[in-house]
Length: 275
Figure 1 (cartoon, helix red, strand yellow):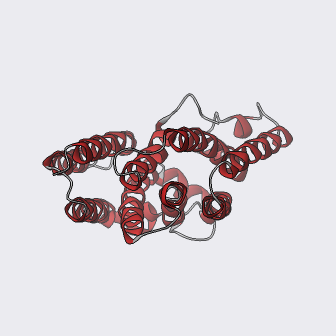
Figure 2: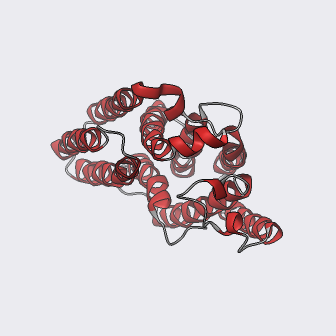
């Protein structure tokens, strides 16, 4: 479940919080926030389990993942599947505490989460599938709070999608050499030396969409300060990965936690101080 490594949970949580605060106009229903918070932790845990199940014969050949429980033999496949089912049932119960539109979107989110780990065998674009999977908290949040999916929801979805594909490409760059040897596909392999350039384009696109949302929603200047700070974060990541050293690429991936946090803080202040 990788609860000892919360970066995945945080990267899944930040855009969900963005959506909750935007959909709730700065004052989201506390019960819905709690359900979404717990649901994020549970679904990320379930995603880790199904990912490790899918990669159990591959992870042992990658330096960074060879000690994962299924790859090392410390955990049986049957126990992993049992845990996955238990987590999914709990997540399903959480979804039923929301409205029907939220339940329907949650079912689609589950399908995408299950499919994602297997896509790296058949396409160089698994990051795009992850972009959808890790963005599903956004429409669920809007559905839960407003029972509709306005244009603002899909703009936020698009911004988050671009951001996810960017940071997961950094993640894939850290494993690129191992992945090439074992036949795992990724955008990092597909893009080659254009990887950092495309990441920059995606991150700047995400920030432009977020800025448009801020203008459209008449958020205060605090939000736009957050946008500027994130441009600095993006620049730092580009400098960090200039030589494409795997360890630095992984650090750039981890650094995206600050991107998500800064946008959330700016959004909260932008709504509180809204003119």
